Length: 155
Image 1: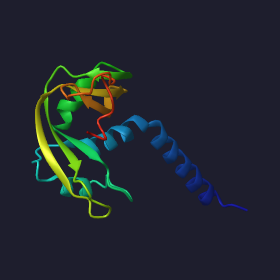
Image 2: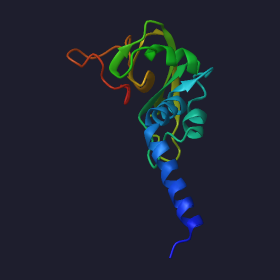
Image 3: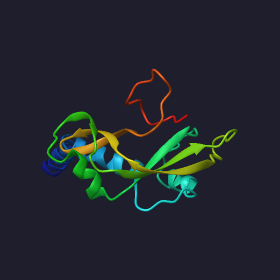
């Protein structure tokens, strides 16, 4: 027979789980922040940043962008927007795009970075927070390709 204390601990555990599930947009923003925001980053820091943020898991990601910005500046993109897909920022950002070197294999993922400036960003907003980075709108695209194709893999 469970004791009152065991029952209380179980209920508290369930309550904590529900609170975490209910705060899912914050958890998603934290993932967005961890994987995409860096202030500052240089084009020679790609491997360190990707490794330190655990972006490559059992494989080398073809490409990964880092937005050179503060968390507050990125939050402002979605301020007052609620839940909208594909919001284009009015502010311009700098991006460091890290592209996997030809022939690199996991776990020795080597990247070449390039700094891209004056980039409006396209993001998904949930509960007034950016949760997904789709693209920067100045990126060249092949004829006939979608306007807001996902950022990675970059070609």
